Length: 326
Image (tube, rainbow, N blue to C red; front, side):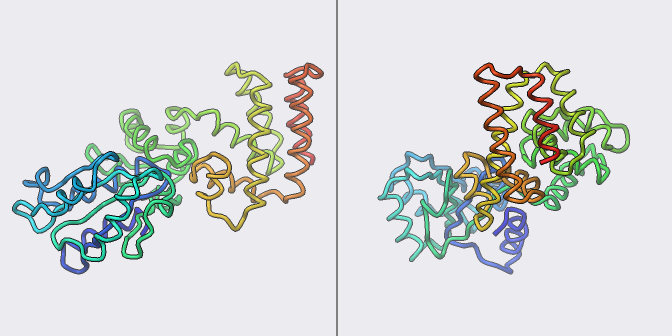
């Protein structure tokens, strides 16, 4: 189940159209979405007694702690939510307990496990409903942005502005929430692309993404404009060369592993799945042969700069020009 489907599922449960699963596993690389998913379960409880019927167990909780929490009868409500923080170091006795629990669960308790890491390496129960909190697709992000901005004082956003916001935040919900608050305070009657460009500061990774995307499209003017931005911000040439090399190396790995998911590639490259999503948006514009040539060229150039054979500034300019013609 995608994160975006959870709200409707819980509404259906409260309306009697669906039943709670005895076990939900919240997993994915977007920690903010995982926290929001947990809050949705809290919101499914009677608000007057929610604090009494929501138990949050830390990773060091014992089997007895979990058993007691699940056996406790809800207070003035029909269900009790028990959450547990898990990771790949979760004790075997906890895993064994959960395996047995789902075979005969409490009719008045729901166990919600929030997993840090690969959920399949922690809990593999077939009866579990996994809530995927990976990076949302662009259309899902637009929906979330409009939902956030609809909260009073509401503020509409232009479609192209939402697109720019997603790009500059790399789809991170935590950043999107933070930036929309600033945009609400800044904009007049409508959040425009110009507002986003003025208020949302792109990080260095985004700027390198923009540079590699411009090179992929062989847009020399845009690429040189990015170089000028780096210079104005005082970023050293060797830093940019190192980042470009790392970017192209990862793009090559992404193209060589097309059958793997974003999360799987992310684990290989030490990245989050959401970042791999953007990596692949650019890498798909290259052939594997072109990427390999770019990586080999950048590797040699990086060595020359680090060994003092080449000057940083001239090497960076040459790098971009060379990548445009490869």
